Amino acid sequence: MKLEICVGSVVSAINAQAGGADRVELCDNLFEGGTTPSYGAIKLCAERLSIGIMVIIRPRGGDFLFNADEVQVMLDDVKMAGDLGVQGVVIGALKANGHVDVELCKRLVDAAGDLDITFHRAFDMAVDYEQALEDVIDIGCSRLLTSGQEISAFEGAERIAQMVEQAGDRLVILPGGGINARNMQKIIDITGVSELHMSAHVSQASGMDYQHAAAFMGGALRKEEFSISVASAEKVGQLKQIMS
Image 1 (cartoon, rainbow, N blue to C red):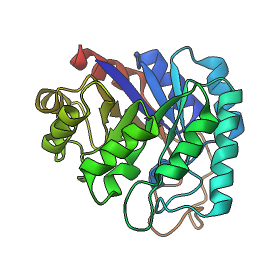
Image 2: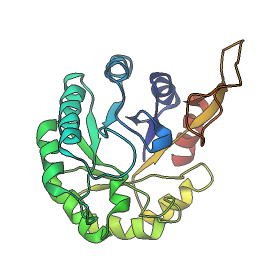
Image 3: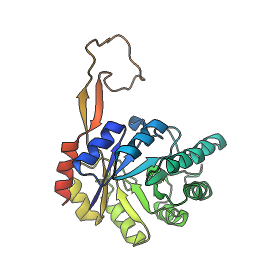
């Protein structure tokens, strides 16, 4: 069993490695489902980590229908990630009709060269999961991150099991979304997967002595300003122990 930890900072990536994670998915803006991290974050992770680093290529939150400028951003970011020496990239795009944008995704795969390719949870917004799975395989991805098109991988476990059967040895199905220490073994038993994608974050108090409470930096739906979410090495270690 392999454990991939979704991380939103260099600190979290280092903690995930310390806890025994096999791989990290490096993102920014986890509250929006993950967007492309900065050059500096990718570079430092590549320098500090010995485990696999998968960089999400997503220029913004929201839907997965991208315009020409956003496509160019993604192509450039794929090249940047490869130049910085990561293991792979995480891509995904849909057409307006809900089908996988095979043409665009193949352009991203071509730009990635020898990098490992995961198709992200844009898949979970696709109109026809069986056709979408065949499209992802045709694109040339080696892995598919999915919750089974449900709000969590636990609720989508039966469908994920069907996808594992459909994919066979053509693609690794990577369940992700709402997986935790309480439900992970049940998901493994139902789906028969060999990899899991999880978060192992804890809330860490800010080091600020002075905390101004009258203003905030985010939108109305927001996390507490003086609390930092980081991956916990101890929590990752506990998850790995359950998996073994």
